[in-house]
Image 1 (cartoon, helix red, strand yellow):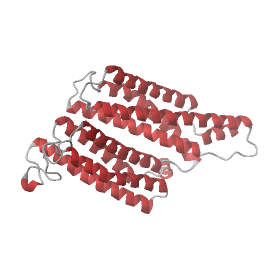
Image 2: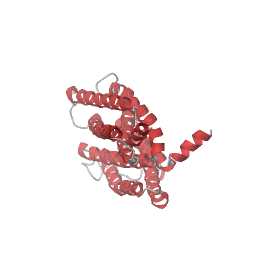
Image 3: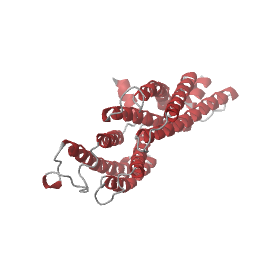
Image 4: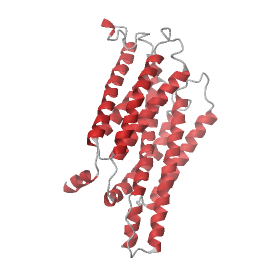
Length: 320
């Protein structure tokens, strides 16, 4: 028990950041389901009101879905603002505060785009066009990315010993998880095993966003772990420096691969919305899935080849 408590104290976990990111994750899935179900326009041009009692409540099940989406969006917005305030008042790492603040600054744009997309046959006839919906989703993904980066930073150990213990286990588990989830995610994509219903889209985007968040976190953590190193002592040998440099190079490769994988997933998600007026050729969608699987395979190979060590741990092991 003492060992678990010690490990928890060494890794400064921030429940607020994790909860905010998780809530934003759920909100994105709810927005996707609302659009896929065809409920996005049920409240008409009454935004931010709806079609039921006093204009504040829904009158039908489809309008309830849209109304509930708006309710969760409002709550999530206030939670993000509260998280930004907490980051400025309590966080030791000011980078986290700035990152969450950027997410807050995007909220007015996201709210405005949300209002525009539900005014078809209302105030703005062009509101429900693919370009507006794509921009709406892109801004949402940007907000989620910023919150994910902030959460990953809040989970990063600040000393070499903790980083060594965490990175070995964490990177192995995360890269292996991505490798397992990528083929499953492909099975739920458009035009594969299942009919692309609203429910299947939720599963597909839940898997895709989860993989995306993991890859973004890996990019953050490898950057941070690479910066946590032990200053070479006078007795350090050239082989020790070479070992440290080799592991550092592996972390650089992991960072670039996870960043590339995140980009591939972002493109996949935009194509998966099926907003282009035509079916995306399988050559493109399947090609992106193959690229993503290769990236996942290479990241696993790099992590297990090097034992998931940090530059600091490599140098310490060589010194011993």
